[in-house]
Length: 336
Image (cartoon, rainbow, N blue to C red):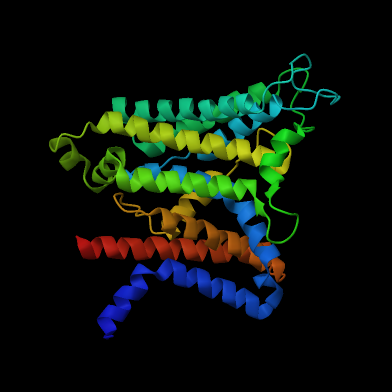
């Protein structure tokens, strides 16, 4: 294999090589890191992050950015948790609410995410507002609305706890006998969502239109693609994934506050960029996004596992993000 082919192979698989190097580097410091229990914990903690990152990828591939993701996560976590407290909890959000089927508050949370996504898409498509500004505005609005809801009597801004077991089991339960080889429900949900997103990206007209819009929106319009309508669909799907991520985060942690999801949008965008989603739009794959999420998951969990200071972890994460964006821009300029 000549040097050019070797360089091309490294470039195409750099994200996976970085992930393997990270895992091996931490394992050298502490071999226990390669245990099945640790792997399961990393997957469990990052399943919701993966779903949120997949939502952010829809918008990034069109050449936009969605800053409202984290606040939508907080909104949907609070909505679902507020309706799924045990009946004898002393500070129920809705004291007189009857026992609801668990799927109904989950649906409410996802629908709330879709509504925010539709608003984002409508503002961007109808008024040609830059996605950064449009979603910055909705980010603030959603946080304000969630805080008002969270502050309602009798809750008055108290953390929502005492969640029903049939709900928390979704975030913490396992398939199979109790042991290191049992599979968390939330990981299975994340895998199913990733497979669905892969199908949308690669096998549907919406996915092809999404890449076309990100590659060149004017050319997409000339070719007959209704850019505005497709953007509304894309932002709505992104909102649905944020909503699902927020609901699952409430189930995983067993509670919710209005500050849930804070800065999650930046983590999602960073994972996408590190995973090969181009900041210029038109490029991105599901395996790459998942690898990006795992890289940050390994950094957060692995470096803590071997005793590295959280401040150094932030520096390492920042360097990886800057390097990934710089690498992406170099590829874009070379293509141009």
